[in-house]
Length: 459
Image (tube, rainbow, N blue to C red; front, side, top):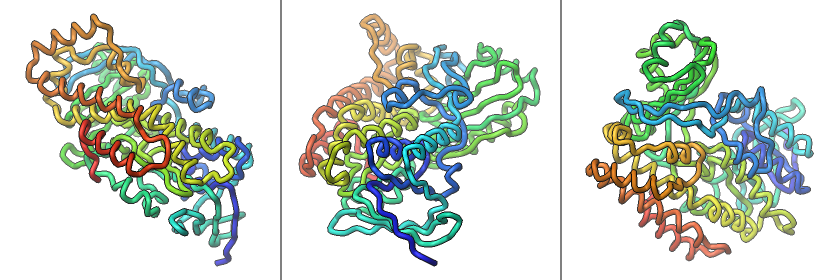
């Protein structure tokens, strides 16, 4: 096969939402950018609906989704325990977006800034020279001709997802970015179905005190970290179902949860659209840059661990990377990329470390604990909304007093929740001490402190 050579200022691997935005933001700052995708470009990233937040688009300096990309927004959501007990009803800050349309928008923005997109790129092999990633070789189709493409650039960006195609090849990151354990992964499914029996759908809604167009979210149905969210459309014609649980095999899988739900709720009819996925659930890697390489999105574990949402954070990361390298003589220099890493950790690390602590807590209490949590009234409107909005809860003094009283009446939960909450608070405070300059020794000390407070991620 013929070999074609391309020189760029940056090469981004992965044309999903995180990669497409990173390419767009880099190109906006005057860099020549090549964007690689292993599938057809139009198929890059998730192709189903997903929950996003308007504020995260604004932080990434992107327009929030509008229809038809914006499917719905701010639905009333009813939280229900695994035993069917009603917990709390909130107005969700979440926006449901069509990921296929969002990805298409971001790739179009990238193309408008001159980004060269090469799709159907397979068998990528990175070349490390003197500890720095400087080039990569892939098999791809360019202008309809299959061949070997050699890409050279001072900066490579890994937006390939949790597998980290480039991440796992770089010697600097191997020790900092271990393979995720199964209990650090969420097996999820998001599907839309026809409603086969409107009477059955109506009975389901009445059972959970919900109206058509509202969401019923059942927590703890398959272990402490698990959810089943069901949204019947206002005209009772369709139903959206989102399910997820730990991928460690103890509680099944997303597909199995979906199958079990459909067997219980026989009014759910034929599939319309959807997909399955496996999502990282740990806090971001302590280090996610190396000479010539930066990670964004799932490749860096830039997700909200308490419920595995990462679309918005991946978008923000791409914009922060572009901000950090703007005006640099060498955009792949270790110190330049460390600045991006430090910026992200100092702004969002505390939130995500705290969220990781609560993810561990929910796993520890199990399904019975989740039921007790709902029954005790410890999942309040403000804490639930904060979690959905991916922000740190800020309860009033009155709410704190109320929660303290409820904990006194639930000593079993108190023994778990109080230490867990302290760990989350202490962990969030550590983000401000993240090293601002290249210093692996200081980073090791920082990472050990986080491990001691929240718990280690050993891989």
